[in-house]
Length: 105
Image (cartoon, rainbow, N blue to C red; front, side):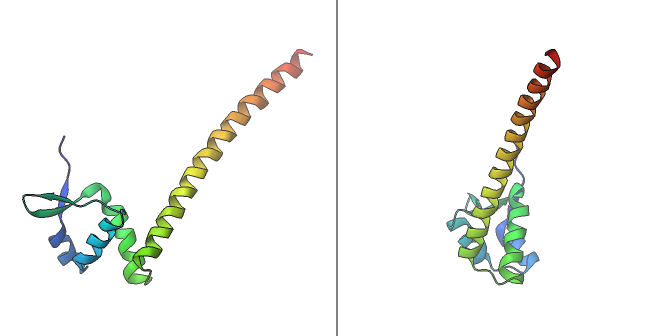
């Protein structure tokens, strides 16, 4: 299985980002940076998150701790939305069964 990797130093140079910012995100557990033969790589699958965190940090002046809190809250919202959808589906099943039982009366 091949994973697309982006060289951290090149990404930072092109996007005008301080590499220490990405390493701080990694240290905080927000992203993963792979090291292969002494070179640091960013998996392409994490580009969306890195770009989002970069906008928060550079454009909105949110520090890494704030980014971590926002990430945690967004994950909780996503989890709660899944649970709500699951419960709605379950409720529909019960509602459909109740209407079938009423029709039999």
